[in-house]
Image 1 (spheres, rainbow, N blue to C red):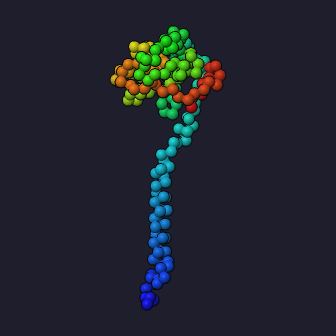
Image 2 (cartoon, rainbow, N blue to C red; image 1 turned 120 degrees about the vertical axis):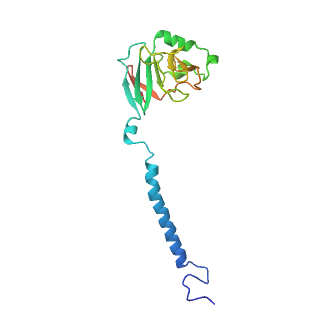
Image 3 (spheres, rainbow, N blue to C red; image 1 turned 120 degrees about the horizontal axis):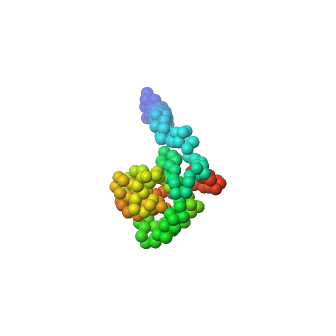
Length: 183
């Protein structure tokens, strides 16, 4: 015989008030947890100023042959070098067997006279020297990272030192002969 004094039990195994209260309690807990966790997850999204810098346009008309400029893109330095004919020939003549991270010069540039690379050493994230006149360019005429002695050539390829990879080539496109969009 069923206990009619206990409202939480049912003889046929149906839903009870306790089941309903458990459901409401757990649902409230889940919604409350989501309300607390969502702002923590949402704050990890890029801010509006970072999204605004997702692509930049650079005027190349002011960069003379043999010189370079550094621009900031997504919080990182980007080296844009207007290479000389000699630098281009040197970069194209390097045998792939000598390279730790083999890439031809043609794979790294869209126009031979312009090299665009992210200026962050692939060893520990330092910023290599060689973009300003008078700075050491290393043994291969490109960039030199003084922190641990990585040397990059005129195509941004690692040639000597502890860095495991070449300088990264970002996504970029030439809008005109004197304008490039990075990103």
